[in-house]
Image (cartoon, rainbow, N blue to C red; front, side, top):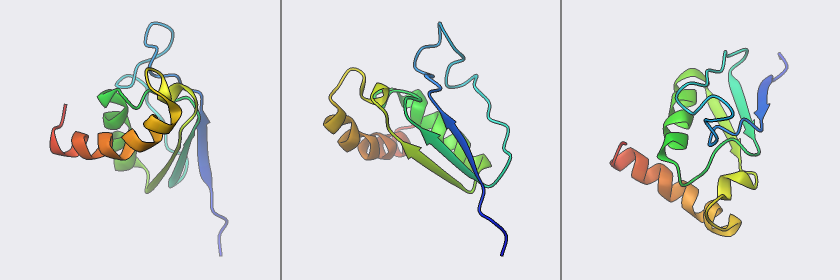
Length: 96
């Protein structure tokens, strides 16, 4: 059995386009089938984050997304955890 490999990325801060590439401009070159996006990659209130995650799901077989404190910016962490699935659903129903 071959070992499971994960491509790990964290602290992308795609919610701050003046300092870093924004959601639509940041490209991840796949090095394996599984991507782990850990901690502070964007804001759950940004539909662009949802589009970014959907794009990663087109490239990677599985995307693991772990929220950090910046995902909750503009709201509370508990609210952000609740909002993420709702935002994903709304993004599917009402694409931006």
